[in-house]
Amino acid sequence: MSTPAKRRTQTPDSPEPSATSGPATAKKPPTRSTRPVRDSFTFPESDYALFALLKKRALSGGCEIKKSELIRAGLTLLNTLSDTALIDALNKIERVKTGRPKK
Image 1 (cartoon, helix red, strand yellow):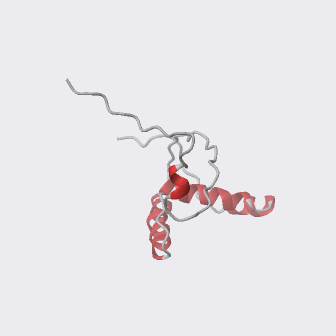
Image 2 (cartoon, rainbow, N blue to C red):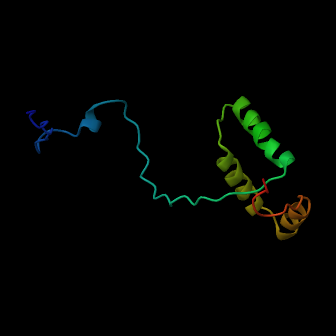
């Protein structure tokens, strides 16, 4: 029978381990993140190919990025547009039939 592992305890006099070890860097306060929402989308092949192109461009700039992060970046940029610029951008995209393709 194995013995249970001992817990490491600190006495009130002992300093915090993070206070004495490592370089003195300011820690970011914990941010409260929201729960991610899963969704699926239908893209024209030409738009889907842009993922690879944009990921390659980001990687050449030293930034590794996921498809979902590209979508979120695009939404953030769209949100900065005026109403007329947003409508113009939306009118330039191809409308796609929603739903899953038939097999």
